[in-house]
Image (cartoon, rainbow, N blue to C red; front, side, top):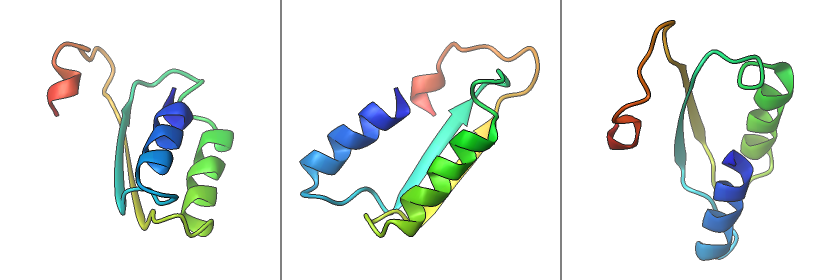
Length: 70
């Protein structure tokens, strides 16, 4: 879902992405692996507008309620 959302932003912004991207994920193994971190590095290196990528993992026992309001 992350890369689909980024692709939509890329198209809307004429081939550029936001300068800062904030990503909050839970601690699932699909969210905390080297492939995801590598893709984040690639976005920065690709010179498509991203200069900062803030990655935050939710604590154990987190609640997904209100996550869209952060």
